[in-house]
Every structure is written in structure tokens, then in C-alpha cells.
Length: 61
Image 1 (cartoon, rainbow, N blue to C red):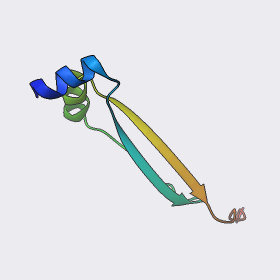
Image 2: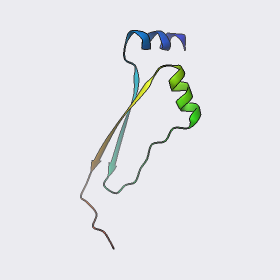
Image 3: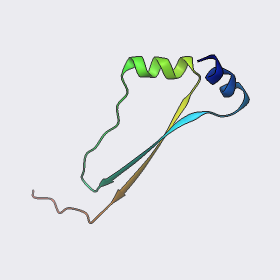
């Protein structure tokens, strides 16, 4: 862990997440408190890219 901390002092370090889903797919990304705490201790950020594609679904209402 010390190596990761030193790296974040010299450069912007982050975790990149790629999420791909169809329109109205309703996927989510969640982090529990332990994961957030560990990221904070390592001085790491998170980048999330979402790519939504497909034809829009018509409402049934």
C-alpha cells in the first residue's frame, strides 16, 4: 500500500470503470463503505464512464 500512496503523490491516480448498457437497462454501480474507506486511504479517485446505446423503449403507460 505504501507504493500506491507514493504514486498518488507523484501523479493523478484513479480507478477507471467502464459501464455499457442499453437504454432503460437500469444498471447501477455501488461501493460499500469499506471500499470507499480503502480508496480514501490510498488517495485514489474513481472515474466512471457510462455508455448508453440502443433504441429508446416506448412507455407502456
